[in-house]
Length: 72
Image (cartoon, rainbow, N blue to C red; front, side, top):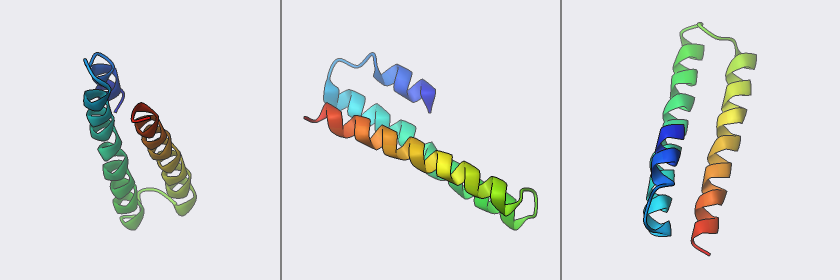
């Protein structure tokens, strides 16, 4: 995720940077799915899963907000 944001910061346009932020946001959902799988297999407990899901949700919202600010 951070590498996509860093790479996108070198973009020549806000539209292109917006797309890199999209690339950065996608792994948030992949990671949330991995947490669900780990929980279902008994490798992490519900408290830990939920804590990470909340952090991922916050990160996703921040990236989305940043994307929206580029379009203004």
